[in-house]
Length: 333
Ligand code: UT7
Image 1 (cartoon, rainbow, N blue to C red):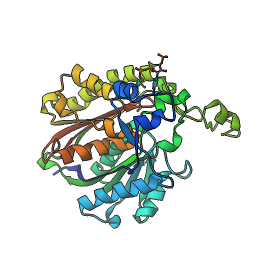
Image 2 (tube, rainbow, N blue to C red):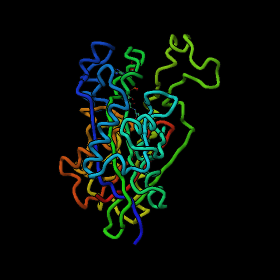
Image 3 (cartoon, rainbow, N blue to C red):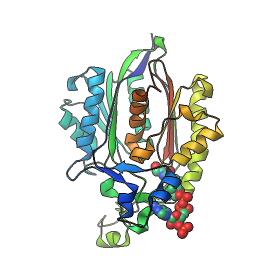
Image 4 (spheres, rainbow, N blue to C red):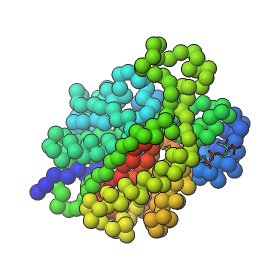
């Protein structure tokens, strides 16, 4: 018997507060028509005042642990993927560990933005396969709304992000039934780092944060949207083909493609260039926008609820984002 990692619980949470494109049009120079036509988004969720990243992570994690039938004492590694931790120092994972009462387990943050959840699965899978962990809680949680500039100068980026959290419980199991994480592919290339980034705060300056950075808008995320789009539609097919080649699966063998939700047009482009039937690609960007590290578990949670992913389904999850980084995994549920 060889050990592999199985997904035994999936959790997902979004705050109740729905922010429509029309709501944003009241704040900044945009329109429902522009946003929907260019991105596929109709609405996103924003956390109400006082709701934190850790609050959302806790809810999603508890759902995943309930499904797995385990309690806080059963987890031996916590991995928290996020770009919007409650505090930049210390990391987010110890706060989640404390909230969930996990005991003194290993707790680490993964700061890979849109690919953060898949990179975290790759870390969890490696720990489980090498016998260093038996049960890993992987959480992707984001409060994007507090970090967005709701001003027309940032209208390209302020409309695309939303808040939410998702979680997986991953456990060591026997690979003989063919289920679990089958392959992982990860890429990183900093050549285009400044095409999607936040210029400040800067740890190489003293002080790291100044009024001038606020006044100039350097503290808000910036994106060269066209450049990101072009790179995304190039990288995603490459990494999907790479992950499938690792196990000798063909595209047709895959039952569901759980893609990151950055822009519906990116997913449609990838789908049509690879001849993937539309019905195999599960999208929920219309309702949630891009929830970054929370997106992939949210897509998988809802694809399961819709019946597209069921017992025995072969799923390819793939993401592309800031860095740039890209990631893909193959899982049989
Ligand atoms: O995980 C995050 C990764 N990010 C992505 O994957 C994003 C990838 N890129 C995109 O999704 C698209 O590039 C966007 C949706 C962000 C932008 O669409 P686009 O078709 O590339 O538009 P553009 O940036 O070329 O801008 C076209 C026009 C500009 O106006 P002018 O210069 O032609 O007058 C923009 O100022 O659209 C304007 N614009 C807007 N108009 C209304 C940009 N944002 C908005 C907006 N509402 N929210």
